[in-house]
Length: 289
Image (cartoon, rainbow, N blue to C red; front, top):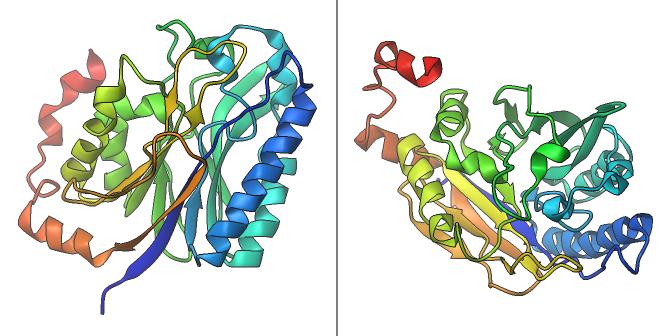
């Protein structure tokens, strides 16, 4: 019998501008919106669900302003507790990306992982922090992650997390596979233009190289007042052969659902012996240069 796990991705628009709406009200509105979408996922009997990067607000890295620091919170903290109740209600594993404060002045781009019984399993902190294109000023807000590449043993599968810009770096994607990930979620905030052609290229390549499933999530719409471009959605699931097996729309709030057959991982690895044939003793230059 196939080992099927029903998984979901949520992509959503943030239509509230900080120029007209206080930050705490934006956060409350986005939590309400996502609660409705999580309920929809629960009705579809989703077992593992991932939200988009920095899900409870706009992608504020479009500017450099300390006004966004108060949006950060401890992990676990109030948003994790909010998600724990929903995870327990629907017996749903949840990956919840948010803005974390560890101590005064030290912030991370983080994803919390919550098991289907509502238990907080741990967190991943984004490793690779961009600061190179107009509108993506992340080093102003985030310290590079220090959690390593953990894999979380949830009720339904072994789950890893890679966040947005991380996806451009195959090294961490490999480590997640070596650590036992059966599926890797990449919550993102990415706009049309420079990197859109990579959206359906890099992550299927990671899936093939590591023979695991990937869930790639992107937000949708134009966010004011910056309007750095269109967040083009197109969230998708990719199988261990690199095939996109389900994909969301470009411009709508959506819960994308797909049934993933985890037995396919063994089938693919029985054909392509990339883990057996690795030569880590020859790779020193990767880490040392």
